[in-house]
Structure formats: C-alpha cells, structure tokens
Length: 82
Ligand SMILES: [Zn+2]
Image 1: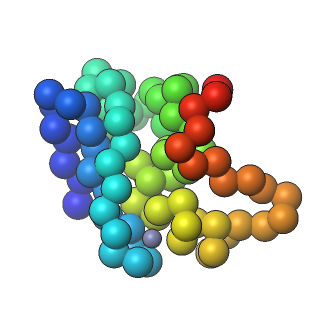
Image 2 (image 1 turned 90 degrees about the horizontal axis):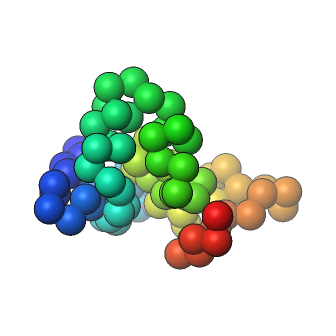
Image 3 (image 1 turned 45 degrees about the vertical axis):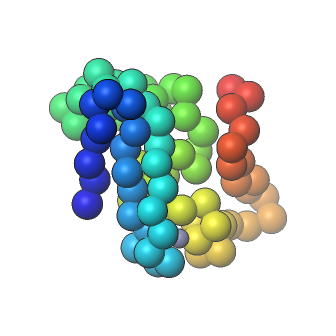
C-alpha cells in the first residue's frame, strides 16, 4: 500500500475512500524511525495533521474532512506554516 521513493522521500498513499493517490514528502530517516515505532508527530514534526493522517491511514484531506471533519477542526492542506 505504501511505497517509499528513497531518492525523493515521497511516501505514496492510497485513499481507502475515494481511491486517490497522494504523495507525502518526508525525510527517509524519519520514515524509518516511524516504521520503527516512533510516534508520527515525533517522527514528522514538520507535517501538518492532514499529511500525518495520509501517512497513517491514507485518507486524503477531502475524505478526512467529509468523514471526520467538524466545524471545530480545520483541515490544513498545502499550508506548511508550522
Ligand atoms: Zn479520498
């Protein structure tokens, strides 16, 4: 389901809801740390919540919002302010 292109550090994710494919840009070492048991927020502090969710479940931001979103939560997409 997930593949890592080690050159680019892109994790390809496949959304289980709509079937779309996304790429999350990560550091390869961070990805390995995560695979080794690190918490996603510790392994990828530079990713926003939507990107972390794509890594964990593959759910794309659109489907995540449609499924779990509420007025209280903002799904950030393509914004790397943090
Ligand atoms: Zn989707």
